[in-house]
Image 1 (cartoon, helix red, strand yellow):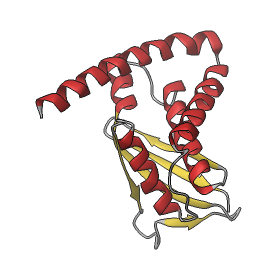
Image 2 (tube, helix red, strand yellow):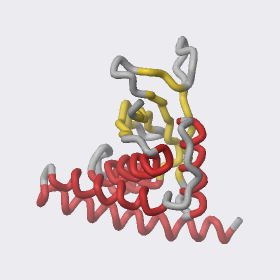
Image 3 (cartoon, helix red, strand yellow):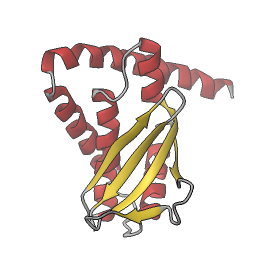
Length: 164
């Protein structure tokens, strides 16, 4: 257990450094920082998922992303979320796209941003969105996006959208 905590602290220190970098590049690059970090995350997601199991099922694909993260020592606690009154986890929007809400509870990025005092929903968060989208695009062979619905101190709610 002590070894895990030590690794977690080291990782957290690295994430704090990343938050500081993020705070520096955003004012300089402006909106370009978001595009740059999203693209970097998407490329990393594609790379990490090269050997992943392919599927057309969104819930299976999300589980495969979880396995990819764990295999690469990325600690990200997330789970599907179904609001009260919604019948299924996966819904279809008016464009025919499949959607799934995800709650991220144990997010290294959020913790680093809060510790550093940097606002959420910036370039580091966009790197995560890109990672998730890139991994899902590889696993499912379809365009995917991950958008924030709510960013909070204890958890973030995101909407994963995959083309039909």
